[in-house]
Image (cartoon, rainbow, N blue to C red; front, side, top):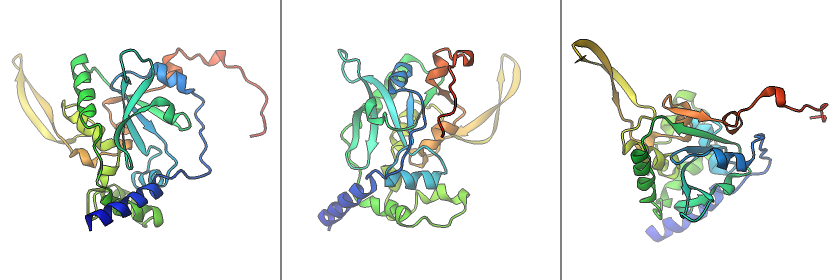
Length: 252
């Protein structure tokens, strides 16, 4: 039965990851500009156009269906920008930035990370290279592609955790969330009460945070997190609206 389930899972994974027609990239930033802006430890959000992307975007009510961790060149002698992603079919792997040149992208950057902690995050993610996901769990995702359930928005996120297996393992943000939580960097922690403590003789209240389980995170959470800065290549390059060259409408 395990062999049969794996075979069925592989067929379903192929179905889920197939690109859909009609996708349009509206971002005017070139992939070269994105590459020049990325820093090690950045998270790249991707607006995918596969069936599984549609399911994730529906359930999370977000444009972002995929997340990757930028780790720099694959080799010291290479200048090619590489990212670590968790792919439903291929598992955890290194991919070139050019793979996402056809998609709308967003860069999320952690704030005040030390070089040591950045190294720990990257090494943690690299330690997962080659990991494969249990494709039996794609049964939990296929139902959202075939028929989108009429569920109130506030409950859709929780539905990612329902089913016979752990469908969130098929979502790339799980790996990145686990890497960041390995150094206690916050993403969207739960906040429950305050702790009173004295600092230099002055009493103060310090908020108490609790970690969410890493399997509960989705790509959107890095966009919403108050602890990641949204980085836009045009602004980083010193954009001045007065330098823009305008032409008459082309009819669109």
